[in-house]
Image 1 (cartoon, helix red, strand yellow):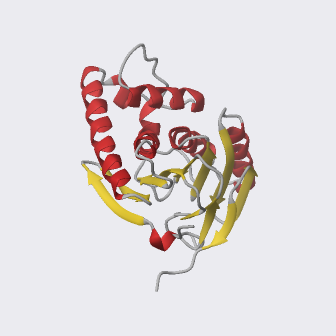
Image 2 (cartoon, one colour):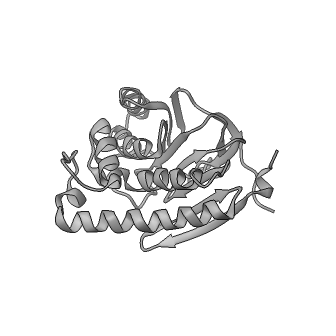
Amino acid sequence: MKTMRSLIKQTYSYKETIGIIISDSQKAIEAGKQAIQEHRRQLEKYILQNPIFLYSLEPVNLSDGPIVAKKMANASEKAGVGPMAAVAGVLADLTVNAMITTGAKVAVVEDGGEASAISNMPIDIALSAGNNVLSKHLGFRLEHFPIGVATSSGKFSHALSFGDADAVTIFAENAGLADAAATAVGNVVRGNNITRAVKSGIHKAMSIEGVKGVFILYEDKVGKAGEIPRIIGIKDNP
């Protein structure tokens, strides 16, 4: 059985899309890079013709459009947010799908903090929460696939959030839904009553169809519910 050290790991960038691809196959990685570029081109073309898709903070109904836009619209509809809240996760999902068609047994794509994974071996991921003491020292061991993981922060993320949480991490059936749900949940985790805010976030997360679990870090409080992968400690790189 392969180990993480024997896998191929490459960073990639295409316009605003920056992330990491991991696989047991170089062919799969190349297929993934091509998929990212193609789906981004399709999305950009669609947005030029339908600018509301870019700016709306609410779900947008689609009667046509490329698969990337349809998947974004579907995920955002379930979470009750704008379609761009799902863009990184959906691109990660579509990239993983392209990699698997080449015969790869391991296909992991991280896009801006959102991750999609199909693997025949466990995959460890770290929690990123800015300056919080637990950031990058705590993580999750993914063992059941396929899975999508996304983290939203009201304090440290470049993405739009109306909340105050250090980190809201969602585990879902795919990364597009996890991405949209993390935004939706992050928006309600706010205010001085931290315990109440965390409970509100948990309630919101578990009400979204397709969400498997949620982990919320808000100052000195941690809340979790549903199916959470094994929590692990992350050692600093030597």
